[in-house]
Image (cartoon, rainbow, N blue to C red; front, side):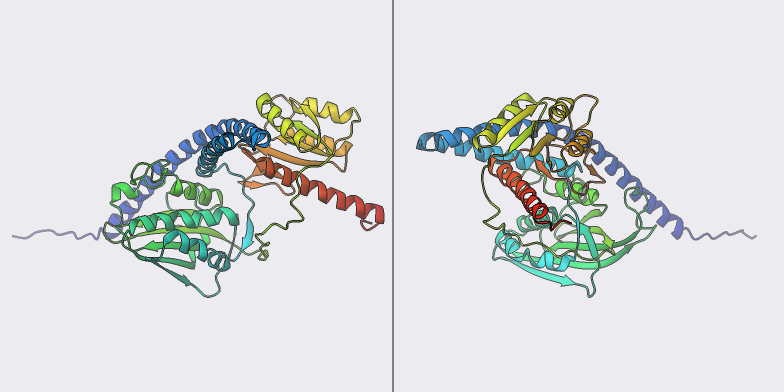
Length: 420
């Protein structure tokens, strides 16, 4: 009697099958997020136009009836609701990877250090904050303001997961994602990344919850305690920045959110001071502004707002009509145009031809959703000035004044011969 025996080690095959299953799950999740993102981007665009009409008219009413206490109180309530709507629209654009970004090359160590006061106020005294930083951390290219929001969102979630206190650890490190790590993730190239890990000692999450944390409006918090858009916004921002984000959690064992941002070898940019100098803030002027807006309700509101600030205002319903006005020889100091206009002539083409006719013309784009007209790869094109809807009367006035002041400086330099 005898027998034949064949022994085969299937450890590698089992590991390969496990990785393929994980990759399949990630791919399905990514495709679902992409579809939802496209939908939310379009919704946010129309929503922002509606909010712009509301905001502009509320501010015009406030300017005329601010002396009446009863009216002022109700206008204040309406403005508070509008601010919440604007924040919601901004979060939807962030999730949909449709927000315009101004990335700069920075060192994340001072960026995180500068958030310490904000984090302590948000987390309270019962949460200990610990920072761990590797030596010689690489630089990355990121929009500083949006990055701060991305750090704050998982930190607030961590606070809610530690109702009796705990520890929040912010870890910065250099890491390399090789081909094995990015298998099944077509939007995550292999390469060098700067990693930020936000870890808490809270209650953790079961697998069925952890796999849904990036879905918009999904939340386990009580009604009214959150929109469920915090991590969704973080997901969209990181993806738009060319990075990767993942969550690992176990019930009773805390949660870790890891954010991977691509390494940059370009020189680090010195960050400007946060405070805006008082001399820059100045409402109103007497220059001529051409408003190009196809939504007539938005157009009317903006025209009335600029007129109340003292500006001479011209208006056009299309890019072609705006170009006709410029070609007519009429003087225009600043062109305020919506990014996406109907008709065969695009806004950027109108701007290019208008600047050729009026070399000193200043151009300010405005939009609730930029698409890919003046932003490519999620980044605003060089030299583009954008005011996102819904903007306030003060934001509009400050931005225009700032741009026209720079024009005044250019004119002075030209007269004195300093620009030769």
